[in-house]
Image 1 (cartoon, rainbow, N blue to C red):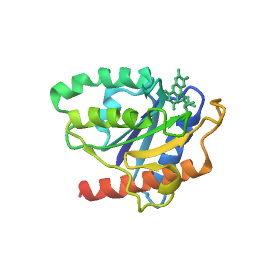
Image 2 (cartoon, rainbow, N blue to C red):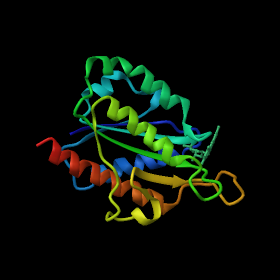
Image 3 (cartoon, rainbow, N blue to C red):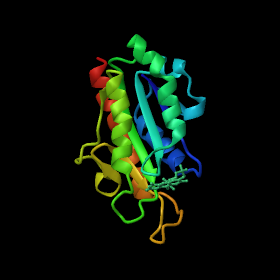
Image 4 (spheres, rainbow, N blue to C red):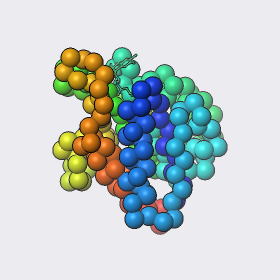
Length: 180
Ligand SMILES: Cc1cc2nc3c(=O)[nH]c(=O)nc-3n(C[C@H](O)[C@H](O)[C@H](O)COP(=O)(O)O)c2cc1C
C-alpha cells in the first residue's frame, strides 16, 4: 500500500497531525510506504502512484491554506485524465478555533473532500466509534484545535494527536478492504 500525506504547516501543528496519522497507519502494518510532503513539495507523480491520498491544512480565514489550493489546482491536469479515480482519500485539519465552534474547520475539510470527489476518489470519514473520536474527531476526519482561549497560538492536544493516529489506522484498514 502506497500512501501520500500532503499538508501545509506554518507553525508545526498540522505537521504534528500528519506525523500522527502516519504513525497510526504504520501501527501493525509491514507492507506500507508513506510519503509525507508539504503541499508545495508534492508532485503529481506522488499522487499518481499513491493508493491512499491524505490532505491536511490549517484553517486560514475560514478555508484551506492557499498552498493546499495551489496543489489542488496543479492536480487539475489529473482530473482531465481521470487519473485519481478510485483512489482512497482522507482529510484532516488544525485551527485556532477561537469561539469554540471550529472557526471554519468543517467547511475547510468539506472543501478538501469536494476536490477528492471531483476526481472520483473514494473518501473515508472518521466513525465516532473509533478511539479518541470524542476529543479530536469530526465525521470528516481528525481536527486539532491549536489556539487558546485568548485567541493566541498554542499547540494541538495529545487527544487530537491520538485521534489522528486512530484515523490513520482506520484509513489503512478500509483502504485494504477496498483494494482487495
Ligand atoms: C492567516 C491565518 C488565518 C487563520 N484563520 C483561522 C480561521 O479562520 N479559523 C481558525 O480556526 N484558525 C485560523 N487560524 C489559526 C490556524 O489555523 C492555526 O493556528 C493552525 O493550527 C496553524 O497550523 P500550523 O501550526 O500547521 O501552521 C489562522 C492562522 C493564520 C496564520
